[in-house]
Amino acid sequence: MGSRSKIDVAYIAGFLDGDGSLMLQLKKRKDSNMGLRFMATICFYQDSRHDKTLEWIRDLFGIGYLSKRNDGMSELRINGYKQVLAVLKSLLPYIKFKKKQAEAVCQACEILSCGTIKTLNNKQLRELVSLMVVIQKENYATKYKKTEEELLAILGLTP
Image (cartoon, rainbow, N blue to C red; front, side):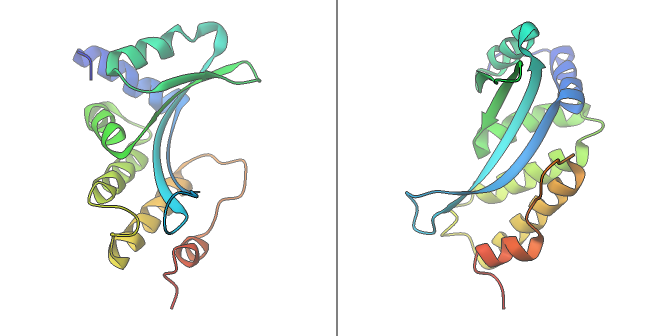
């Protein structure tokens, strides 16, 4: 992942604090036995007229993809447990406002790096659900999010 100075990394952490989001989602997936997968994402948002900053961040880390939305905004998304974990570990010392979410996403990525959704044990899956709830509670959300009980039921972890 590209070369970065501490100043660049601190700037990006501040950008994430202000105009970014951290997500851990449970997504439907047709090509897996359970039909589900966990997805960790770092997302940076910027007005499309000024999306050079997003290109710079992508180039600095050497990962992520840019997209322009229909509402005049651009997004830089970084997905994948190992990539998200590596980026967050470099940003974590400088993150101020989203530290709780960043730590939870890091913990989740470490668990997810241990195996697939099918090979993780019930304790690990329950921990992932707990971390999802922590992240959801800290994030600003305009739409309904699944409760811990609903997430556990989707994973077949209810008594």
